Image (tube, rainbow over all chains, first blue to last red; front, side, top):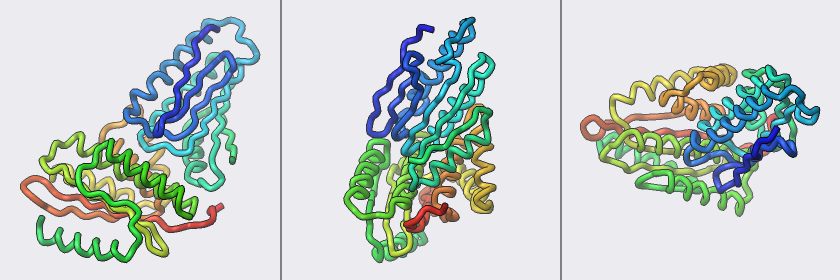
Length: 135
Length: 187
């Protein structure tokens, strides 16, 4: 289960990313409007696909990793980022095949109906359950 | 500048002069300028008492508008890089106005994309949004359309637009979006 965590520091217009199976913690938070959206999100997609490969080879997945909770704590994301968030969510759906239960936690500001609605639209397109958390 | 467009600019200016202008930019709009404008907008919003809900919506629409112009500027090496961006507010609404040059052959696609969304109610716009999102690979058209859908959803209003023919093969595209000033969440 050795996999180096992926940590990306936030910038003014791009989010903090923490993907770590050790803690375990999977989270994207902040504002998502990276200069090159594809370039920003591809290491995240790659990390998840490698993690999935590792899990598929593991016979005894520890209980702490059986449930994968992925948290989105976004203040804002642009329409280009929406496509990549969709890709992450679709990929998380495939973890079920490796015997994992995925849960998406979608945090949103109480004053931000649009952020909640965006989460609801994603929820209609994926199999993993989404829990909505108002802050 | 054609006469029509000049008239239009004058009436837009007159309309805007009755409002409080929060942001205005005339000239090239690229990523760097977009970042500067957004930074200024954030600072303004932090220092002024603005409605929280509207602030977020205005920010989102502003991003999509500016990024749309950048996208066009990248793709289309028109010889006229000048663009405009205005953000103002009156007692009831925020007004986002952008203008940029587009090739005439791209007008139809842009028009169709906007008209399609303008004819749909909110639920159907969301259906369209999901349709575009779930596509494997988003085309340039799809990418631009997500922006248009987003602006319509966030503003809750129809997108107003006009094309003004300028020099050969190129037109000036003006997009206007109104965002109501709201103080309470809808739910």
